[in-house]
Length: 293
Image (cartoon, rainbow, N blue to C red; front, side):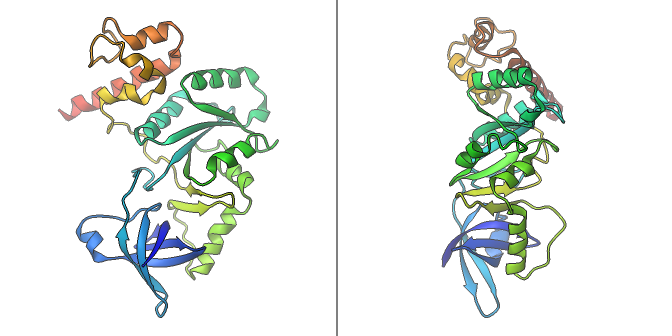
């Protein structure tokens, strides 16, 4: 058997990268019987029949990470991309994507694109908020080739996903990282002798610098109702040093006395807008729980 990685799945066919070639395979019936669906990013063992030019997935290796939206396995890091302007940054959306990624234990970087639009005050504000939270913030401009070298370094030898709203320049950044990425998907389609599909599916694109990047529809649902209210505070990295200072082990950091998180807020170690979004997300989660019960 050969060991490869699934780079695309369409209509029951899975395309596996092995030694710089792409192999079209189907999954054995045992996976369907066990209600297991192979995912893009899965490392698999497969056999391939040269006579019919098709293979079979025999075994799916254990997954380190499994994202639901988008459905990708073994992602190691997320690069969260927002624009300085056009569109204006939505801090609530940014924080929601961050906590979703924290929930899956992904390494995280924040890329602020379009800094050529020259709003140094806003860039400084964003950087201060998220660097205080412990994140690396990468200023980027595809027009002026700023930040691209750092992004290449980050992507090297990892499976990464780009996330962020439409119009912030995710595709432009990837095209700067490696020209012809979109052509590469066409080459794969040609190599496996299959027609191109118009529906967008999650797909892994191989990088010349090493590693893979997920070309996907992104976080198609931004519901956080799968996160427990008690867990939410742990998904804000800047809260963690203060959690042990809370008087109550089940502290929600709202009205409780002797709250370490609120003290961290008062002392400036936690930024107000991050705390406000924590409160907003907590209310969302609790409202969802109350509707269920």
